[in-house]
Length: 339
Image (tube, rainbow, N blue to C red):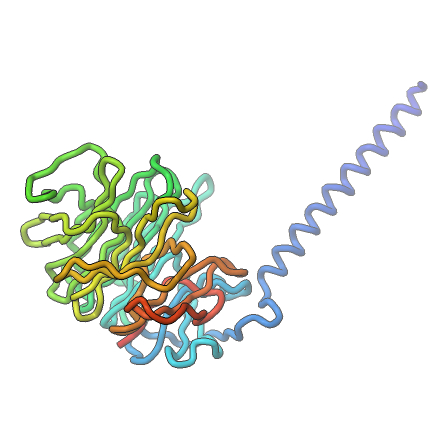
């Protein structure tokens, strides 16, 4: 093979590689452009004013592809399938009550992402920021708006595994006083003080007295519903096999996901409601596994997310075990109903 032939072969190879690289860049650019545009047939979304003091509305994280992807978006609770108003504020997890919101966000860095919890006022202006030690998982605000909580994964990526760890934090939104981890609280388990190295907490939900909360405690491969007291910094076990509790508006019931034997490891949960006075469990009429902390739309209805074409859709279900689930809206997650 002559030198001239070798040069021609190398030049041809270089041209071919350049063509492949250019095609790859164009394909990636086109795909990004498609994701940046609203999907035909998807929800109609426009920029506008979103507040947390508009009774009768629902605010949630919009999951539809387009310029408003991941923004806090609002619709009337009575007509959630209609046009959406987007705020410009992006969150991974969100909740709000009484004019206070908590927004868990990713902060994109050159090497890796970090995360933070942002406390929002009624007009979605930032009041405070707190570092979050891992991937955001759950968020809640107390009925008064005076307390906010969040949970983050600090190891692993699924409740279905055994190699994860979580941190649950609570902050007083009036004073800024932060409890960075519930693991500092004293534990009363089955009537006795309890300590263990493997203790984890997640899924905080608040009572309206700005003192009492409920959460999940995990230890020795089991989960427990605990009642917490912010004044005494104590948590007490209430019921076993409870994850991601959500306290009803009247404070008498807790909705939660329960691990059911015999189901697949990646989809092991069914929804239940626990009567806190009687200890009676009611299974709900949702046959699918739900990996979410449900929200009480009112005293009778629960709303939660399930996987959908855009990432997640919201469904509603009666809280008394009757009826059947129905889809509330597509491409949405982390709803908060404003009262």
